[in-house]
Length: 232
Image (cartoon, rainbow, N blue to C red; front, top):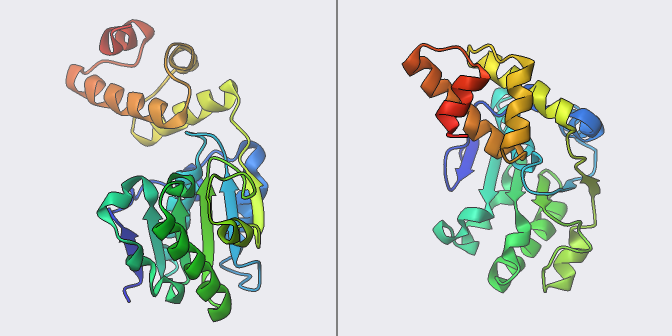
């Protein structure tokens, strides 16, 4: 099996732990990164949190770090499960790391629930694979009909992502803009947070649009320019 298995699409290569603003979630980040040096740690980690708080970013980061360390990793995002079949989980327990993103989306998919249940059992028995599972809800409240699966999801460590404050969101926007080669004044960052949806995926999409527009126009990021580009 290949050292990197991204299902069903190639993952973004700019999602790393270094670009994740941990805030009050530093314990979770430290736990995930320490796996590479402490293989005896619990084999399953469950991450819950509202949409846009960074669950997928953390799973992408784990996969990218595994690639950097030349270790095998598989990512399965259930937002795209129509492009997959449950049988594709067979054998993933041979990977060093397996990331299952948005497992709450399997609410009405009993075949997928059984496949995940079997994967967890095989992974625990095999003893080498470490799994990371994400969902909106905690393991006891995730809307999965298969009670045995909910029980298995409670076997490891469970973390709930704390949301970023507006000041933290502003810092993230300015840092991401800098990585793109743009200077974003603090007042522009605050304007975006006030006038756009505040979840980070939306803000990152807005930042990408501003990056393209500022390059085309040769214009710095100012509030009047942002208003014009975003039609605010």
